[in-house]
Image (cartoon, rainbow, N blue to C red; front, side, top):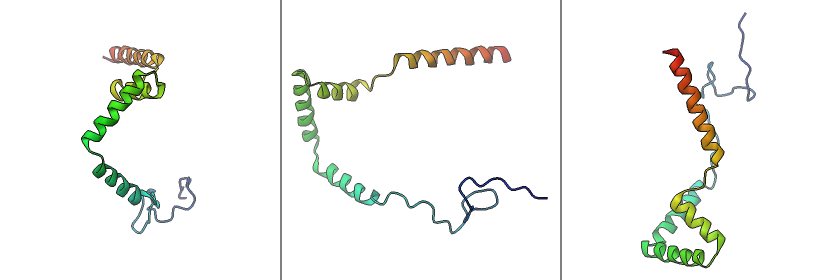
Length: 107
């Protein structure tokens, strides 16, 4: 008797016996706007010059210095990186200690 694995996504049309996509599978439709978004990004990159970016950054700095909280956050996020939860670092360090202890036991 042959046992078949459950098919999580309905009939496995256009898949081979091991569940991989087979020839003729159209795949997912993808993002219908990808080409349009790509051309818009290209247009923006062509339009914005390094001096434009410097001017915008200078304005952002002026706004931040005047107390504009979103501008302050933007500058800090872009220069220092987004803040990391303090407890996340502690949890990672604890996991590293546990792994190191287990590796020490196995040798």
